[in-house]
Image (tube, rainbow, N blue to C red; front, top):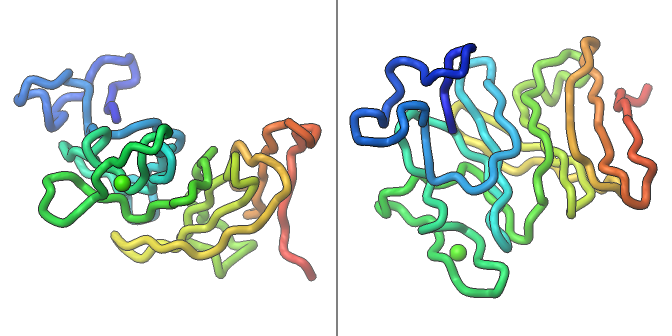
Length: 185
Ligand SMILES: [Ca+2]
């Protein structure tokens, strides 16, 4: 995870520069980052595609090592084990992980009023899982809440100005539709 000025130079005060890292780096040990979002408390959440098993939602804090490739709650694609996250191993564990995977696409922090019961949740588009995933947040805690079968790879989730959800399909068998989700009457 990089933290940059708007001109692309490293932001001042990044936490790892003094340890010899590239001065742009904010946190590390990530595998394949596919979305970040700030919650209303200013916390930075991130999701990443894991290996075979081990997709993650992480709460990002400066200077921490999130473990890849030393630890993962998944394993290598050829079946070789990767040690799971464990307390005291020196790596920051995910707040939520999936095995089998969801294959995350986009990430949204929902702040709208159209679905008040979902305010403060994260929404994730699922690619191989062909789903929309909701993760409930409570301060620094996160837990799996819903996973809806959408019948198509979901690449991106966004919030409409009116609080509806926009989903973007990833093509394939579908035609790659843009869906707008609103509550039923
Ligand atoms: Ca593992």
